[in-house]
Length: 182
Image (cartoon, rainbow, N blue to C red; front, side, top):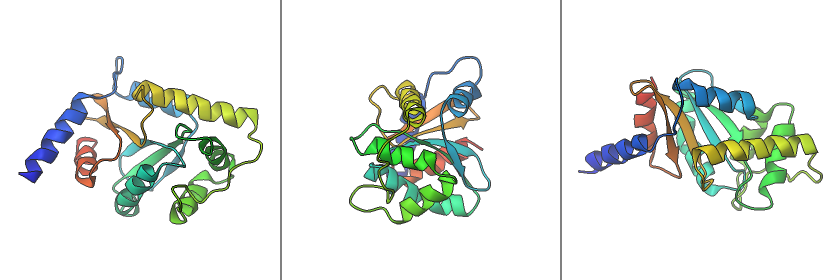
């Protein structure tokens, strides 16, 4: 019974997928070209993950995805956003300003505490970095008008469209999405 309910949930999530024009990869290409992001992982399909540094659900999701990342079954394109509170922007800016944002993100995830990534708040966010985070916020708004995080996008190859997983979901839903992306 539980297995069937997860299948139904995934089917509902797939039905609420991101509208795209012409080709499934167009929206993902737009996120990659217009957003500011970084890639984590060495092999596997790429899931685009909108993450707020102050989101405990994003942290929980990342912990559940780590085995897939470490085993080379999945790569994540992390798109830092600032939608939850005033501390989000300076933390997202610190990640994006880092020389190696992927490494900085992994270190910050490992030290997650008190509902925040273990990354300091940038004191004076440069306008260019603030604009980059705002562009990421706008792209998230195109996925979910409420700006809910975590928000994962992936190409459902069988359906030929970009699908989304919005909010914290059981790992089984993400694993089924991974199968659809291969």
